[in-house]
Length: 105
Image (cartoon, rainbow, N blue to C red):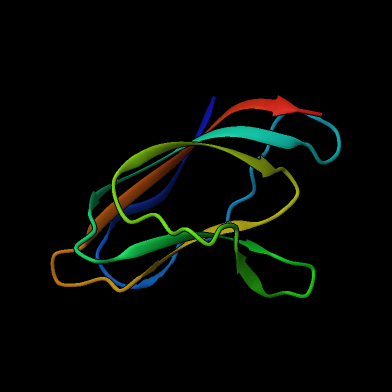
């Protein structure tokens, strides 16, 4: 199982580096992942975003992450993703990790 640290003690608005879920497979697949986000939000919210073919970033959901949680996500292995943190305040301190758990054709 691979582990990707997306944010580590993120205290300001901003985007993570982009990442692509991968595995030992040929071609694009849907990857079952375990996503954790934790820390002090203090009004901040985080959105998982994907990069479309037009080069723009779009949110994967209308519902941002606003509190600590563990989520099962199904992500495509051939699409770049990033996490966007907004509305951070002086006490915001957010971390997140993505674990690739299983691959589906």
